[in-house]
Amino acid sequence: ESKKAHNFIENLIEDAIAKGEHTGQVVTRFPPEPNGYLHVGHAKSICLNFGIAQRFGGICNLRFDDTNPEKENQEYIDAIKRDVEWLGYTWNGDVRYASDYFDALYYFAEELIMRGKAYVCALSAEEMAEYRGTLTEPGRNSPYRERPTDESLRLFRDMREGKFRGGELVLRAKIDMASPNMNMRDPILYRIRYAEHHQTGDRWCIYPMYDFTHPISDAMEGITHSLCTLEFEDHRPLYEWVLENITAPCEPRQIEFARLNLNYTITSKRKLKRLVDEHVVEGWDDPRMPTISGMRRRGYTPESLRTFCDMIGVNKAGGVVDMGMLEFAIREDLNTRAPRAMCVMRPLKVTLTNYPTDKTETLVLPVHPQNPDMGQREVTWSQTLYIDREDFAEEPPRKWKRLSPGKAVRLRGGYVMTCNDVVRDASGEIIELRCEYDPATLGVNPEGYKPKGVIHWVSESHSVECDINQYDRLFNHEFPDSDREADFLDHVNPESLVVLKGARVEQNLATPMTDLPYQFEREGYFFCDQELTAQAGKPVFNRTVTLRDSWGK
Ligand code: ATP
Ligand code: MG
Ligand code: MG
Image (tube, rainbow, N blue to C red; front, top):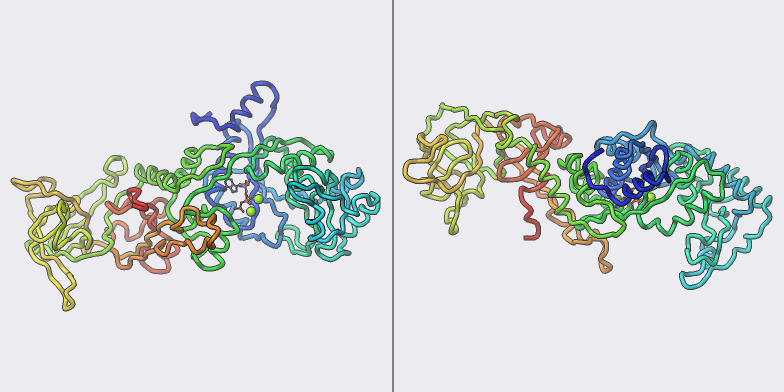
């Protein structure tokens, strides 16, 4: 068993086991609806459900909750499977679908009708809303509520046969129209939808509702603990009612936990879909998206997401998690693991006037300064180098530690050089620095003084051009979707993507590795985008995260 602290659900299970109330295997499930890609909120649910199964030596199923065929498709199913696997989890056996149970669900619905616990209702949607009452007013019984059992049964069968129009009739549970819990006021169990289903084709024209489907699917799979988010707390009596009123194969227990709310982003598939459909982002896996596939493409690691989920814990009380925590998790992970490299983002040419034109030298640098096991890398020193424009100031501010006229800096892993001349083009822009290097300074300070700064660099002939996607937070509002005055799309950060063309990265990265980001020294963590690299014919890197949290400062 892992040393991680237990969450309240694990405590409940542990207690139940200790008291002998729970015997046998612990069985959980992760039940996404395939109507979009998974996001960081789903990661919390995945880590929770699979984590509990691991902790208690149990199993966790992956079940697609597929009762809304119009909104679902195979692309989403494939993406969800890929994301769960990438996070490092293996579901028990084959993937399940709620639609696997359509026959059983139908059978249980007939059983309810025959027991006088469900009836076919012909109220229109508007009438039904009116009959339903309000939080302060009880509802009224539908005029169809006391219709004879065999009439409901015949109508329900005719619904299935396609003898009615979409929306014409529904099957409702007969519970209590005066219940203070609105979910218990004769909820709909089945509705008519003439929709092609991605798994069952056109076999069905009636589809079961979530509140009917979920408890029965859980029972069919022998789920012991059905974990869901707090919005479903009010649905628990209905979940239990369904299981009590059918001949259920087992009785799972529903336990609610707080959903993850992350500031500066959105965790709702429906809204994320708008970002995609309205081309605010390039797709579900755009690196700015809080989707698992977007974060993967940006350079987040499965380890960092799992650590993040541990850090935020599992609670009954909702709250908002700061985006900085997610960034902290990836920064920590990459700090210990990412290979180092030098990349000059805004190249400014440097000519070493006292270095021979044809000469080169091989310098050896560690791949990771704190981890010698990661080995060494070679970079080449030559007469023509590039440094970052931002590392040179013609009129330096006080305490400037980088390069300026007449001053010296050290180039990382190389020599100390002094800037003697600034070359400009016709428009007055600086296009070259003419510097002198000190041959006695490889790994040692010059006689008499210590240069203040160390900057990164590449050699012109020993570096490759690349493009950099500098990603930033997608929204510049802390709670983009809770502003009542504006649409959440109005809060998109216009600088969430800044593309830097013509950056130069050390030669070792001509073909970058694709399993982990690099740390570009002094810049941040950057991950090769395989798709964009193939398109551009040169490396394209996505900025995963900066080295420090400087957001909003
Ligand atoms: P969305 O509004 O994004 O569509 P959902 O809850 O409808 O979310 P599902 O596909 O039904 O999405 O979610 C599958 C599982 O993931 C559910 O058990 C759900 O409770 C959980 N889940 C979804 N969003 C979050 C979140 N933000 N935090 C924690 N768990 C979540
Ligand atoms: Mg759902
Ligand atoms: Mg949803």
